[in-house]
Image 1: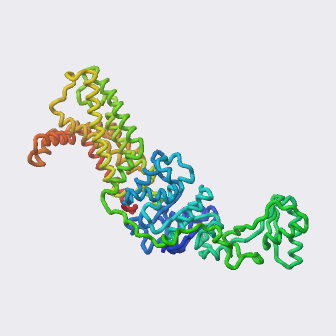
Image 2: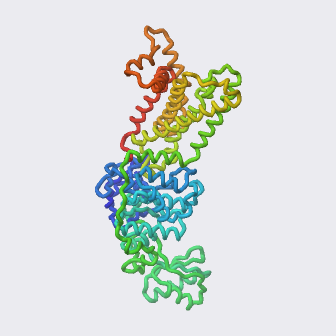
Length: 587
């Protein structure tokens, strides 16, 4: 049972709230439609139920509020707006990424692809999908976790008639299997054909909550539509004969050639046209939406049980599939966000393009720096000229880190329909781990490529590996990993990739010069020798190889750049914890 109690959105300036004290229920095993004209508050009501917009009220999903549901993907499937995914990602890649985040087996991806009719489009990129395929992809994402409740905002928008039939058949099968379906629509006739219960909204307030048959009887007026070049003449004849037979009939002409007859049927209108010699080009029975608060029309020929809803209703699932099958529960594992992040990184071309660009630029700069012979080998291997605040590898690592959160906020696929990116600690740790791994790989590849380029151009004898290569390597890898983490945290705090890049550049451009001034000023005591004192404080030495790496890491920490980077990361992490880890979706 889905229960919405007292939903009220925040009041708008000089206007009433979009949703005002809305209370209704959507029972399991039934399709419930929220019906109303544009601006009636249908979408706002869904967003309040999902805690996306500020407001008052409670929503219970099988007796539990949303904040108490440990596995939202298992309980609620949501379709709101377009597919929020990166346009370069494929259909299968998008669903596999979401499946990893929800703890759903990857095999479930192919099941939902075929269930919604996306077979053959698995390799298409999201940016080139047609409108109908986008809506089906959104529904596939909602079905990934095999949820009990489906909340869909106008799911048939942009679909062809055949696709709508298939969509409503899928929703009907979900309801027949015991699930709850709540969808919005502006078409009252579509709600009558496909829903079991109809909740009518007008200006954010509840008008009626009733069965579909009762809704059809009180809101839809049957009428006969006649297309004829003599609409006024036929209207007069129909009215005259109905008055003689004492039948209540209303005849309305539109556009000079369309006649709408309320209170009659096709046989009566057709016989009248034949008797008076009026040519008829089109004669059909249809229903008119009388508006959300329109009373039942007196004299209208509405059947006692409402319009025939079975004629246009899609066929539900076979009887053998009516019982809800045993579903696979999402896996509770700390590796879920890590798998999600790995699939997110591997599913877009920007990662490879940034890495290739960094390697190419670094090789060119290394050759140019080694040409003069006066550049120290560490600077040549890092391709770090004085005119750049950071080497290309550090800038590339920071950019990849910034994109890890920046793309989440630009294309919020992780929690589609559930608000912004879930800023949980597990997701942050996963992004930091993947960003560090990419930074280490990029740093090692850059040093190797630059060394190979220098030896190729200037010979192996001129470019020799120094004895303190372990300390240099620790300094180099610590720099690229620190920049990557600064990009992750900066983008996570300020919710934009540009902010993450700015956080990376802030360290060498602003913080390091300021810190050098502070450390070089007159003082009674000095921090010189900090690395050696840290080594003594941390205890006995280890193996010689580990000792060299450890000494290199301590040397990085003792440098102004290392201190500035560590302080920046600490401030960003505290800001992330303060602003992000509050009341968001759970993993």
